[in-house]
Every structure is written in C-alpha cells, then in structure tokens.
Length: 352
Image (cartoon, rainbow, N blue to C red; front, side):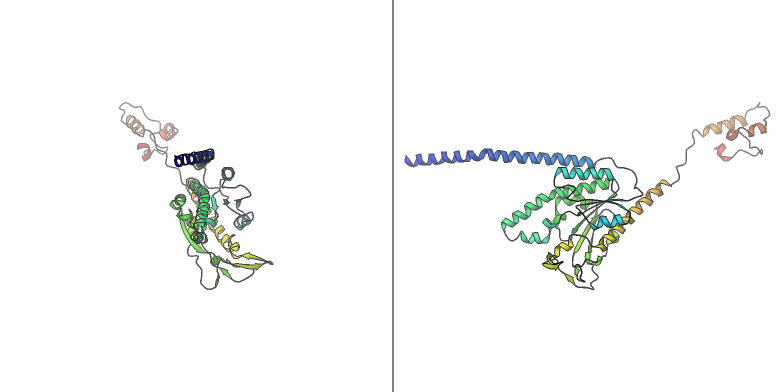
C-alpha cells in the first residue's frame, strides 16, 4: 500500500509540475498562430500589388531599381553616370524581412515604375560552405536550416517582384553565386519558370584583389527575363590566361587583415559596365518596338451600305422618263454625281 501511495503521490506531483507549463505552451501556440495569420495577410497584400493593372508603353528614359543593394552600390552609380534614372533599396531604406520594409519597397516601385528590377539577395545561408557546415553536427544542421527557413521570405518577395514585372512587360534580374542552393527551393520555382539562366565568370570582367594583378575565381549566375541581357552575358567565361585566388582566407589591405570573400561582396567595374550596356540595349529594343507599333498605318475604314450607291446609279440610269441632265450642275455635286466634270464614266469606287 505504501508503494501505491508513493506512486500516486509522484503522479500527482508530475501533474502539478506539468500544469505549470500549460499556459506557456498555449501562449507559444497562440503566438505561432498569430504569426501565421499575419504572414498570410501580408502575402495577400503583396499579391494585390502584383496583380495591379499594368501601365503604359516603355518610357523614353529608362528607370532601374536595385534591391538588396549597398549604400554605395557600383551598379546604381554606373547607371547614374550614364544619365539613367537609377534607384537603390538598401537595408537603410527598410528591412525586407519585415512587413513594413516590404511595404516601403512596394511604395517606391509604385512611384517610380521601374523598367528593370535587379535583385541580389544574401547568398550566405545558401552557400556551399554552409552546406558543408551543416554536415558537421546535428546542432549546426539545425542552425543552418533554421537560418534558411527565415530567409525564404526574401525568395518569396523576389518571386513576387518577378511576376509583377512580367505582367507589365518589364524585366527582372536576379544574381547569385553558382553554388547557391537557393535555386533548388520551392519558393524559387516561379522565378525559374519565367526567366532564363546565364552563367559567367567574374574574372572575365576583371575581378581582382585590390592593388594586385591576382584574379579572383568566382562563377556567378543571372536569372533574367531579358533576352538581350542573357545574350550579352553568354559565353563570358574565364579566358584561362591567368591564375586565380580562391575565395578563402584573409589578406592585409590598408594596414589591416581583410577576408578575401569581402572583395566579392560588391561587383567589379567591368561587370557593372557590361550589365549597364545590356540593360540599355534591352530598353532601346523595347522603345523601338513601341514606336514601330505606334507608326503603323491605321486600319482602312470600311464603307457602310455600299449597295446604296449601286442602287442609286441603276435608278438614275434606267429611269425611262428622266429629263436632260445638266452635266455642269452634276459636276458640282461632288462624289455622288453620276458623271465627272469631263463627261467620263464614274470611277469604279462609285459603282462598287
């Protein structure tokens, strides 16, 4: 009996201890449900922007928006030097992981109506190094996959931007390192369906370590809706006439140790100049096509009731008791007269 009493007491103690965690568990479930609902509402709001009615033909002046850009991104600066209206959306302008940050981005897009949107979301969580780290331990696997799950909101946003541009016959471009596993996610499928991939080597555009002649080996991929951009970057592979420095380790630069990977975080001048040239070629082709459609001659206006002229002629010619016709008077009656001023027969269009 004492054993049963002790067992009953232990069970009761466990129930009391477990009851202490019940409110916390319910609160966690409530917070999760609330977050899920808010995310669903935000996606509906974002989809409203995507499905908004499309606008007019391409403008004469090209407008480019660079998203996930640094405060001094070279692509935007290069485009501005060429006289192009270029805008950037950096972390300073808003955190795109939050609804408020995404709302600011959509407001900017609605205001400037960009012809091209160029995005380069963070590749760190999807890099090959992270894939290797995830294999080292269960804790690292959980950390890496948790980080990737939190970053999927950015892939979803990029997919929305791609659909938004496609519906308006504008262009979208996304850049990632070649080894990025981002393109293997379900969220990336809408981008892959409406864009084409082109791969290239950054060393072909002059990517080097600063103040040296050592090229950096970095192969990238661009998903683009523009055939001109795809064609322009095609076959831009390493010429294999130089040695490479791997993206690993550090070096001394300006008196301090700097990781080599930091020099790949921004685009080299050769790449931004080539990309700017390709964007200009795309926009020029779109504007020329729009003007060509505007200059097409209007469709021939159909005649109404052509049989009326035929009946009128037949009635006038075949009338048995018609009086003499004053040809000079008929000549003044314009297109409906039966005889021309010179007494010739009516033109064919009068009979038809």
